[in-house]
Image (tube, rainbow, N blue to C red; front, side, top):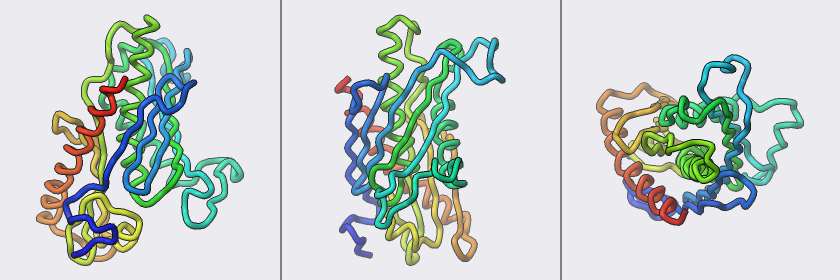
Length: 240
């Protein structure tokens, strides 16, 4: 199968991560995966949600949104409806869960770190790109907190990244672009740490049910993409 962008079935789109993309954020990163581009930024605040106050631990939350012309046709800004739509709300919860899973929240004090993921251009895989880029932005934010003596050591226990895999025209594919994603028979998003532990697996059959053998093959393919993403993250962090 010849893919629309000429890649091999198990080939990830070229990824570039630029740390420190925003001058005023405590941490930030621009991630590009093919034609998908997401800007991730971190804000540190000396406050906590009410349900966590007095517990001696911090919190990491995320917000996700798409700019109006990140897609072929204009998408209205979500604030015009008063709240995020269901898709955005589900994605930002996934980003937050993924980052909290690898962070020692006790060591950051009673602070909230908000990770904003803004999609500048969407060509599939915006949620997995957000997680992968957000890790780099969060790492930079923690480095800055250490430099300011707000925390004593790096709270991150490992790295986290995410990729997509799917079955398109009966072919297993890694890192689906939009044209592949909307035609997929099976679509998975896989979030994993660089220690090999899964944080979350989202899998959906768009038509017929799929077999356990298909799951095993998709997860095996995702590992190649995740290894590539961890390498891209490490390369970005060397610039800090």
